[in-house]
Image (cartoon, rainbow, N blue to C red; front, side, top):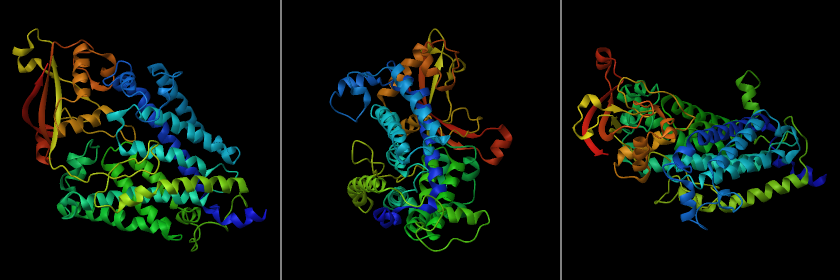
Length: 489
């Protein structure tokens, strides 16, 4: 009892609301991630996918990331992948319903660790289609947030502080990448084109793009203010830490409204709750202003966590602290890495985005024809394959898909920046020529209703948003310039 009382300062009694938000929110993101995998992985990386996982596993025997698919008893199959996704989704839903939180202190740990193992197994064979910072961020969260514990114990402050360290790496790392990278972030012009050229615009992106220049300057200044300045407030006592976290949350909500970045923004918001105290949240809805402090003892909740729980949390955080050394050095390195992992388990990663800004939007458009002689077919015979998220038809308004991740659409954006003979893209053209049903399900429209075309061509365009007058005259959302045909099959 003496030890538990002495270690009571490690209990974060004033973060019970934040714990539930983080646990249920991260679980919901896992459900989305497994759902995205269930719907898209077989066509992209399955047994007959664009980059088949079995072939990759055979080429990299004994190498590559950790995955259950390397076990002899569990070789890759699309059926096994679907089972893993369904199990992961059921686990996530159980946390969203609050079931593990009703058990003993440790009951949340195996649930999240199993989701982490399952998703790490998938990520390790996902290659280019899983090469995004928010994938590593989800894995890092999955390995850590289970140690927030059930409602039987107070939220551990050490775990909450690690999540703040994660938020600092994410926000400050992104800010430093920008300052060290493109000069547009230093001369405040970075947002002049970003809403138009970002990977997957949303329904409000055109509105945001058409704001005056002074507005875009404020956007850049606001980004710097939060990522380089306000983020440090989360290290201060309450209520200052909650105020700093709230500024991060507001900035992320703006990004949610103006773009499609899968679950990156929502996961950042969830991690930011590690610095938001219950007292602050009660004040927001009309309670007394929170007192100054670190948010530990003195609030409602379990009185004492058991000694074994404190020792377990301490051991976990020591391991995470050791793994934090390289990411810490990276933050202040002149050769800072962006979206990098320093270990095979994607724990304590480096994050960042948009260190280099694009000022023009290019799109690769795939068209097919059923003309018996495609090499001499008229223009009217060529019809485009439309993707769900990326721009194509100039009259189609951009839609909101995030936090759902459209993996093929994102890769098409990267392809347009550097058109070339990517293996996955050449395989995509082959699947379209065959009328592959799995690939067709990833598209918005198939102009031939499943029938294979006699030929394909790949066209290259520059896109820009239609002006107000152009939209009134033609109803177009985009205006595009034809840059020619870059490939035929």
